[in-house]
Amino acid sequence: MLTAAALLTRRGQPYRNAAVLFGALVPDLSIFVLFGWARIQGIAQSDIWRKLYWQEPWQTLSAISNSFPISAAALVIAIALKSRLLAVLAGAMIVHLLMDFPVHADDAHKHFWPITDWRFHSPLSYWDPGHNSRFVMLAELAICIASMIVLWQRFSGWVVRSALGVALISLGIVPLFFWLTLG
Image 1 (tube, helix red, strand yellow):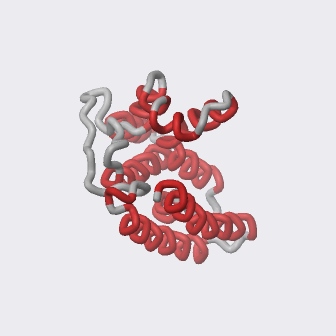
Image 2 (cartoon, rainbow, N blue to C red):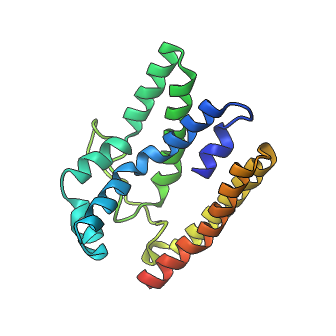
């Protein structure tokens, strides 16, 4: 999200910026819905990721929201309709997918669905220590900090800067969570 925001947001364009933020979240929406629904149902976190995540409808929803062809089609439609908001939304989705594609190993998405169900199983993972996650997290941290610097310079309002502060805190909490829970 931070990378898409750094690349695509603009000062004084709140609708554009909201579209960027939403577009950057779209690829992960199905995961958020899955996690929230499963926790409300009382399903253990380990069962969410080891079992439920791999079942329908979650795999199809994940394929839809992580699809390069669908995001590219949205961008083509936006250009045809001359819709800047849809274009930046689709652009933010594509930025997210480009950042995601090389860092999913055993949990790879169907990034080219509906054309194919093929998955790129990367040797790198953003969370799995067995696939070099510590190095990926350091690289991600560097990219996020660079993006935050760009955004801090671009926006001076307290809302954006407060959100960047929360994002900075989460940059430490998320890796700590994965290292503590996954070894």
